[in-house]
Image 1 (cartoon, helix red, strand yellow):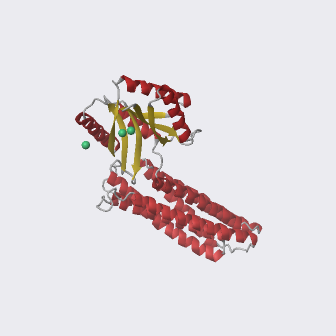
Image 2 (cartoon, protein in one colour):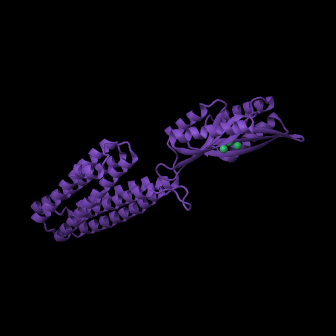
Image 3 (cartoon, protein in one colour):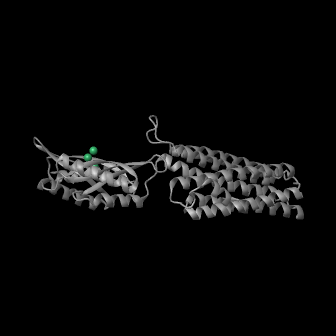
Amino acid sequence: MMDLLVNKWIPDHENTEDAGVRMRYGILSGAVGIACNTILFLGKLIAGLLSGSIAIMADAFNNLSDVGSSVVTLIGFKLSGQKADADHPFGHGRIEYVAGLIVSVLIILVGFELARDSFVKILHPETTQFSLVILIILFVSILIKGYMYLYNQSFAKKLSSVALASTAKDSRNDMISTGAVLLSQMIGTMTGLRLDGWCGIAVAAFILVSGISSLKDTANPLLGEEPDPELVDKIEHTVMSYHNILGMHDLIIHDYGPGRRMMSLHAEVPADMTLVEAHALADRIELHLLKEYGISTVIHVDPHEVNDPATRLVQEKVGEFLSELSPDILFHDLRIVTERNHLKVMFDVNVPFGFALSDEEIVDNLKERLQQLDVSCRPLIHVDHYNKT
Ligand SMILES: [Zn+2]
Ligand SMILES: [Zn+2]
Ligand SMILES: [Zn+2]
């Protein structure tokens, strides 16, 4: 049946690299998933009401939570595709994260509610009614989930899509969960053991775990997470490959949703470069980064003194002092200015998050040592923090 839908709905379905084709696969999987899970939810809801079993009810809501996730994914596909407009110059990609956040919270609430009800059932067990109808409903629902597992798995392979692979994995887990519920009902009926509440707790825990993990997935990009270190490495490599780029620092990547990232970075160029030259170089690198990584970039140019002997000397000394403190402390943007009777030394240091010394201690240490070197020295030190990976 799925092949029929694929043929009908995705005319160019062999062209799996194409963004439009991939989107249609995603929408097809999501839509069929919503239909199947809604049927499963209603079927199990009836079975749960008939039997009075909390475990079957929990399993029903597990399927309802899948409906919620699929709806979010579909909304995400639609809205993320919407072009940026005057009010939202960064596009609408983050809507997917916000919708995902809301659904995750709902799933967690449902999980709590079911865990509480199950706990009550453990304290005050009631006999559940098991019948052939319920057995058939549960058995058919395992088959439906098996079918969902198979088509999502085959789509995931075809598209090498992580999202579809995780949907497939979820279907497989649901088969196990429903299987366990079915088994506990049968054992309970045969032996008279009151397993229902315990089984309900297990399913509720399952729902909670999946809710929390999807909460993490959606909350992190919203809060702004540390960029992928591998990507940072590649970007650094690209920037440093240019002649006249002496160093780079303060790379920041902003994520406005899948495929919409912007970044800024500081690039050090020789101080004797003209503004026109430095600008041309920055423009060339910005274009290169956009083409290679699809990230639009703003490059801030920092002059790096290479010829002035006084600056070179201070650079060397600061480097020495810092390497004595810790090889993890880096510095950049060092400039010196002679003002009347004193020497202004300005630079930034980058300290890893959670470093043993406080910012003040580091600054005081450096100031003291620079002034030992030259009493007229007036250091102006700015401290930044970075994630050591
Ligand atoms: Zn800088
Ligand atoms: Zn420009
Ligand atoms: Zn600067």
